[in-house]
Image (tube, rainbow, N blue to C red):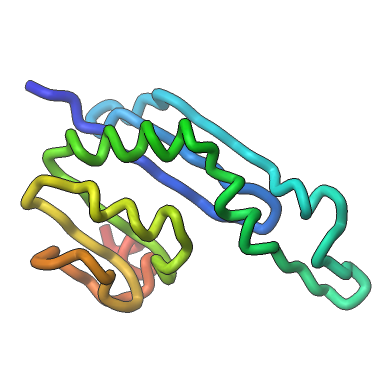
Length: 133
């Protein structure tokens, strides 16, 4: 039997985090964290005004090409792909669905995901859906 893996990508306020885990055991296989370089320099932020913004390049540069390449390779091999998000519009993560070759795709998101085709789609906030599982 082939191993099943789960890939999680989280774009946070000051960094992007990626996690690869064994779907059966929950074992953490790999983790990557990249702090946004502009955030660290205080660019696009004004704490006095509670203004915290990222530059669009923070998202692109934050996920190293190695992480993207590994994610694409794992997605291409996946038997099942479950995608969960709050907007699923941040690239490059939003475009990863195009690499899935299987026929067991599920999406949990507030809106339908472009490129998801015949996926099982649950258009509800992910926090509410996950709380029911």
